Length: 244
Image (cartoon, rainbow, N blue to C red; front, side, top):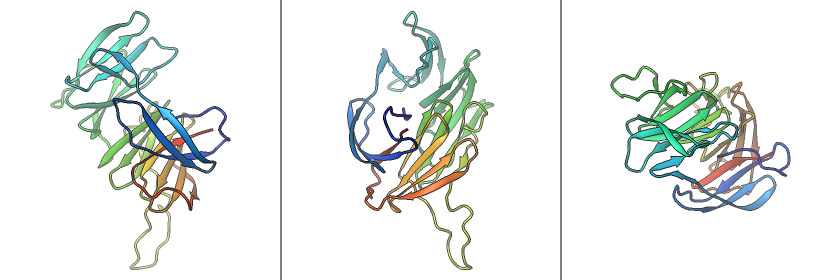
């Protein structure tokens, strides 16, 4: 999960490097406005056959995906350590849980289905009433609280909120959207390599090509700033995190 880190300067943005694996602890180098920091992070195993995706500290119900061999998602009552609801989904990929809204991603992040946690149902690809396509080419999903961000294979950044439905119809965040170009010239592009979001709506995307960080507001869709990082990494194998 991305989010605020205690002790970081308010408003700082840190872009990090590292290879991420889902099954083991990993080390990530983060390069940001404040310098180089080493950090360790990892995942958690919740129940046989299921991977933990989202935990609400004040809610005993946790939703999880069976991604290894199954085609299911389940609600786990952590108060009694039992699975109390199991539903089916084809090619599950990830999920985001915000209050009574559950977003179930499938088809390698190509589709998202919105469910009410009080009335969950099987997700049948032949009856996709509540299923929508994610931005074309989505290859990464990040979330923090109500905020959901998408990064596509060509570096486009999108974001929205789960609570108001904009997470399934997200806005594109482009610092050059209003750029004026002369006839015959191409509009500049910000191709992001790493993406992070914070619970307060902040979005941070790092472009190795431009060695710069774009910060935006997921609530309004406004690009707040683009900050140059002359010594930032050029590799496309990196991670980002919003801190402060």
